[in-house]
View 1: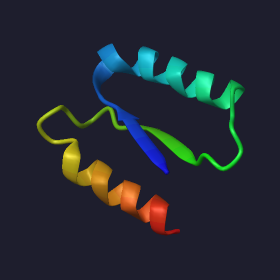
View 2: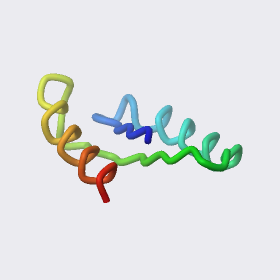
View 3: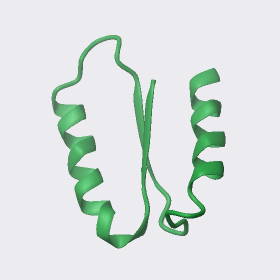
Length: 59
């Protein structure tokens, strides 16, 4: 399971394009999730993203 997020406006466009590439080139058996977390920043992203990632992985 791959889980990735974007924070702030400077990373949203690039990360969204990456998600589009993954969608267009989907490989069976590869699970991934992309989420925007615009209210977070580099110093605060780890804990909320990790909790959400574990929730997705375990569901």
